[in-house]
Amino acid sequence: MSIYFIGDIHGCFKQLTNLLKKVSFNYNTDKLWVTGDLVSKGPDSIKVLKFLYNHKNSIKIVLGNHDLNLIRSFFEMILYPNKLNVFKKSYYHTKDFKDIIEWLRKQPLVRVSLEKKFIISHAGIPPHWDINLSQFYSKSIEKILSCNNYERIFKILNLSNENQCNWNKNLEYYDKIKFAINSFTRMRYVIKDTNNLDLEYKNYPAEKYKNNLVPWFSIKNKLPDNFNIIFGHWSNLNGKGTPKNFYAMDTGCCWGNKLTLLRWKDKKKFYEYFN
Image: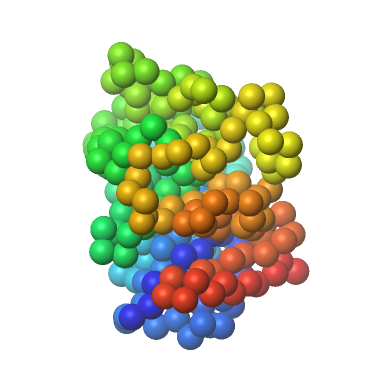
């Protein structure tokens, strides 16, 4: 059995399937871990969703910000049908879409393998959180997403866009949830000497500590020293510039660059370029 990690697919179906063929992926024994952002920007989001759903026994995903937006849009369709636009209708009327959404909203924002010593989330892990706290908030969000209170789901996902970027232990519960969503799915930089996020600046960290902003992975974290962190989201990194044991998997395929597949046992990377 081989374990593979793949970066943000963003609807790049051809590149995804070509990579799996390139490594002779065995759907009976191998596992593919996906860093989230399955949809949007690329040409074939529906094909990607159907493919991953049909092979869900071989797939482990974490949700990214675009996946959460898709779930939010689904419940917006149900709660506010008069606000539908053409793009959202095209998803909604796709065969099996409801089943796919049911599958998606039961997926976590964080996955951990204690055996293989890695943790995966779409954007990263807040440096001041340990594994237990990260899993606690991931499971709390997962519980909300999988509940039958559609208004509650829509409210939480909509409110996360109000940029709850500041953290302290005295925050109200839902503010903590919003901070967790932003951390796991949107984080790039942390404001120096604080636990607060900056969600605006996206560039590669060429200028160290530009404007008192520090890449989240450059801050000493509370994870075990022998743990590896796999994440996506930050395409401007192009898989580079991270410390040891950090693996940046988003290499900007949907922007015309490449999709990256990492084979875990030997850390070999495979690429498929957008064309």
